[in-house]
Image 1 (spheres, rainbow, N blue to C red):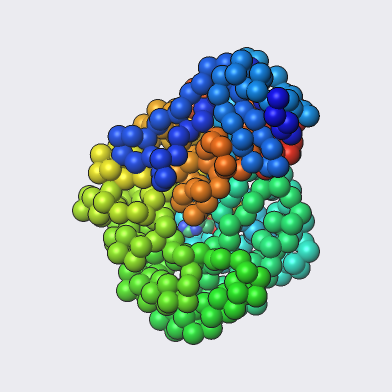
Image 2 (image 1 turned 90 degrees about the vertical axis):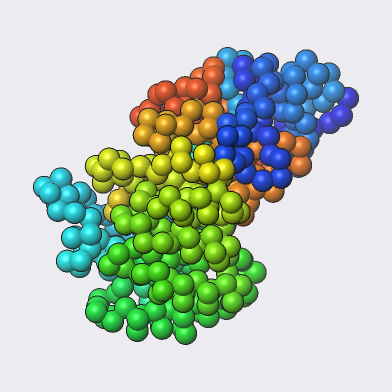
Length: 423
Ligand code: NIG
Ligand code: FE
């Protein structure tokens, strides 16, 4: 018998989510690699084997055995678009929106992102860390084992770097692995009102080089992102920022077509971005370009839901074009304060018309590729990190079907039990 650290066995369904060296694209989305009465063996934080329980129990002697009888086992969720870390809340704006004000009206009146910028600037690094530590605990309990984490509530060099420092500290203090993204082009700060090009100059000449220096000092690769939207950064401004970021060695991401179809998705494809996110109003030609590219489309159905809108990312069109589709929360204090990828799956099934199997792959394997982490996580296959969830349900379909309660019972991160018997 071969010694291993952990053997999870007797799972009613083990969803391995096959990784054929990339995200599952187009019609192929939704291959689960499902093993009934399945088992998974783990050594030194990595997956050693997956297969039928009878076989693995004969082959491996485990220090810790977990009996997953009657439970589905899936990869840990990867949340590839969040706006952590921020400070404070905007519950007042939620009430204003319910009263008829639009998100963009509130933003143009000095609220919105700028309201969170003021609160985040005023917070100490320690307060920012402690506040977001709690938020990450909620995410972990709901099954997120890796996530992207954006700056963008600083909008000056000092606070943008404070957010990066907070991400670094949070990576040390808790289990979810955070992949940082630098987003100084999230809004136009008050001091630059009416002078967006001058702010773009500042981003290019001062902030991106400061981010690059931080990245080199901490040996921590960084993505750069831009909120490409009418009234925020237009396509030429987004291009200037992303071309400079690319030159400085950043990976690229774009907030594209959330409220208007400006062309951000086509630009993301042209510049070889790892992902283009939101894609609610994307023109058909841009969807076709995306389908032929390596750029992953990230759908964020919590956002229109959070805003009470009725337009969702057209998943059917993206898949028909052969695109790679991932799902994320967009967790942020304005449009969508939602820590739960389970909620996102439930919304994606209803409003993006994904099957539970498609949504599950989009929330694990494809979302890992959307932050450049596909080689390490997102599926249960030998060699990958042992990032594993044991659900409190017998089949994976319960994930799309049920909502509002936490269906994750046990979270294993890199082979260690991070949450056990939560429900
Ligand atoms: O993805 N659209 C831009 N950024 C966020 C909202 C951030 C905020 O309102 O604080 C989004 O929806
Ligand atoms: Fe966002």
